[in-house]
Image 1 (cartoon, rainbow, N blue to C red):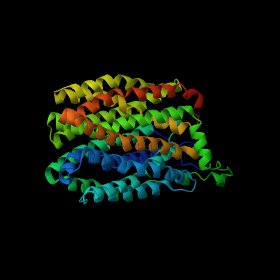
Image 2: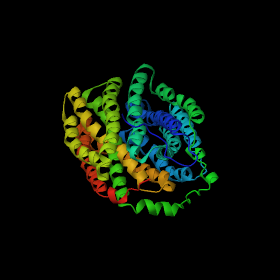
Image 3: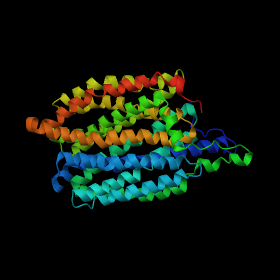
Image 4: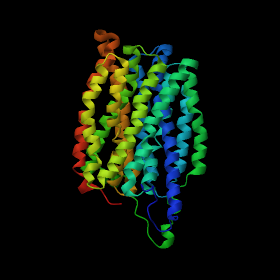
Length: 437
């Protein structure tokens, strides 16, 4: 029988049974929060074509809305917010609840936009709110779960990415066809305000459950920003993982937006049909891949630490040619079927990569380490992926017309070999650099 996640032993910590229950509750609540995080972030993808039609936008402007408008503020604000989360007196639960309330409200405001500038500003607001979520959540999970279970625990949280994307595709596609894109945005934004209250009343800050000073044990000294940065970037494994994860995000966010447009333009699907097709690919396959990657990392990483990243490295290398074939096929059902396999393989990195990041630094720098990863993934990935894919599509349109997106995706498929290489390089450093606690 598999061991349930439990709080790490510490003076003043709750009994093991209650600690395990607290950890399970925390993981489930944080998963739901992360589902809303990606639901609100990614629903714009399925709504891109109707938004373009009503507001008269170009592909470049669509890419700007889906990418830089959100990502620049998300990435830049993520690091100072993470520094705040790493401070011993910070209540990370309250921080997450506040962030959730802000991004949910701004998602609803997106539905009120009457032009490109208003929608751009609202998307910036979503990015500002979401900057406060994941670094604090990763830090909470790492403080609450045993080191040998971190990959699967963080992967469990990471399932919010494909689940949120899946729900965004389904809800956005169906509600858009019935009531329009504005109602779709309002419908997914408002419930997050209620969830923020639930977070406040259900979760507890683990730091408040561990009164070590009362037992005469000194707390670890806090690190300055410079000290935290030096510790993080002195790890060669971290640098390799950062590069690999950033390129993965660049390709993933670009494909998430433009594969939908590809099915609509090249295969003639409606937004509902494209949403359901991509829900299978990005949603179900992504959920399984994220979960499976975490499990494989825990199982094989316990034998040799380098194998924590073996599955992501080799999986991405295998995914590249299969992904190319998926975009090449003229039958959309065959295309969807072929895209399932690379989606599973490309999703497996989340738990292993972020668990390694948490293990490469001391506890006082964990949220900052996660925020730097998110900085790279969102500024490079979300910031430039959808945008540059859109620019390339506009450049190729005079030659290939509606098929321009297909040719952009051809190139994106083979670029997946880049993160495969860097994950492999990072795996060779893990035995020497991973810390035990």
